[in-house]
Amino acid sequence: MTTHRWVADTAGPGEIPGVAGVGNTVNVDCHRRLRGPYTGAGSVLRRLVPHIMARDPALAMAHRIEITTIAPELRDLMGAPPQSFTSVPKVTLRVHDLQHTARLAHGVIDLLLAWSASAGRLALGFADADLADPTDQEFLSILLRRAPADQITITVTTRSSQPDGDLGTALARHADQITADPATPRDDHRTADQLTRAFIWSDGTSPDPAEHAAWHQHDPAQRQHLHDQRATELEQSADWSLRLGAIPYHREHGTDTGEAASRSLLEAAEYCLAMGFFHALLDLGTRGLAVTDPARRLDRYWLLSGKTGTALAVLGQLEQAEEFYVEPLSLSSKPMLHMNNSYSLAMLALRRGLPERVAVIHLNNAIAIAGGLPDPVDAVYYTVISQVGLALIDMEAGRLTKALHAISGGLDRLNAELPAGKYEAHRSVFAYNKATVLIRLDRLDEAIEQLGVAIGLDPDYPQYYIDRAAVLAQVGRHAEAIADFAAAQERTPPFWELHYNRAAVRAEAGDREGSIEDFGRVIELEPPDEELIEALAGRASLQFEARDHAAAIADLNRALELAGEDPDLLFNRAVVYQETGDWQAAISDYTRAIDLPGADVEELEHQRSECLARLASDQVPA
Image (tube, rainbow, N blue to C red):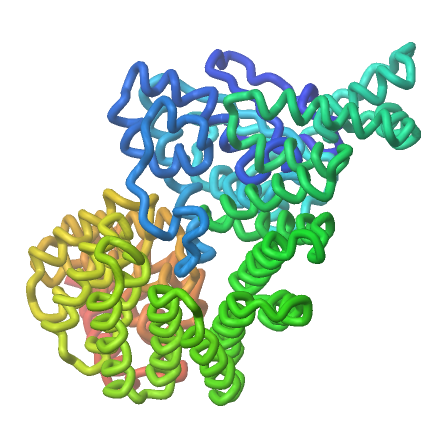
């Protein structure tokens, strides 16, 4: 039987063993220092996508968002994908959530599965996986789970024998560990200069201890010039993703750390923020701050600090994030700095659950500064942003009418006093906020209208369609809801929430097969356990209605494995057993459920009695 393979304690990419009988082989190095996020996955795409475009362009274009996000160089081949304001660098009013990278991974895996089904078995080798960015480690963890080894054979090599986190778990669960052939000792007659140059031209990824030692011992000034030379060489490449890894690394070790390195790290940080690569953003922002002198480059230091704070906040490290908004306040009295950071501190206070007055103080400070800005357009723009921030506090506190009045007033003022066609990202977000309040006030027709406004301003943001679909379904407009789900699907990598919500709408509309298909996709995309259990139970119910009893029982078995002893799941499985005439299995499940918290004891006992009677009847000799 073909299996995935894991080779631990290897010395680098050259030691990935081949796979016998497979010609469609791609070996890549995942070391984050090369290209940052998705170094490995992006390298696979750079190798395969030109072939896919030549043979099956429709397949490639169906995954254009994932491909061009992970391997931005391929935009020259495929064109730019649909892009919402969320993915535009320097527009940071709204950021991706932490599930975005998992969606990208699933999309690429869908592509690889479809391509291998058409072009033949793939063999993919990933070296230095334990030194990869978290995006690549997440991608590999999902790939190992989803890819049948006889269709896509995966070989992962690590320098460590015990990789951390989900990658280590996935390797232990889905790959056979094999022993690498020992490296053949060789006499190394290279000079110290040659060893140093080899280390630098490996972009600092070489596992050779002699090369690393020579680099460390080299004359610092000469070493810096070699890093400059390598950075300049890489900057002339068409591969933009080098700017997320090797180029900043070399600039940090070059002759101009205060300017070239600082600028390079900020450029990479801005891209990673727009793409939702938050672990890399945290790393780049921290490194950028270390080489940026706030006395000389205050604006750059402030930008790097804010982006680092955003990364920490998204990653759930809220207390640590606060310092990156507070510290710049001590470095300057610049009004724009104090205004923007006050707003950020207010939003952080809301997320941290601090007393309401803390956020209000920060927002009032931002409003006071905004009102005194010399540019009247800026004054209106920033005042409205902060006033809508106060409305968000009212929303959290349940003061919905007050929140609605503030958001509506802010939108009216933006539309009346600011140039048309500008600040569209903020207009769309405010319209969405207004719709959110209207939903909570049960004013659903108005909410649908406002979501339409938001979509008109930012037509490629999938969440707006998903949310409007949910409201349309609430008011019974199922066909329109399903159309919105389809529109969202065209604008996003695989999104389990979309399929989960659409499955319910399709079921209500009588489309049992479509609902089963959507629940199946949810299960494939593996959401958190609670939603996965509900998806399994929902699909089992539809399969039961379709009289596919074996499939219903299989789904309920898996749901029970995840949930443990659950009276509702046991009841549902017992009903399926009862329908098939397996009285003993049904009795067992009803009995297990009776003593569990939340059980409907009367109904369980009634159904068990029915099964006991049928079992006794079947045992009476004819």
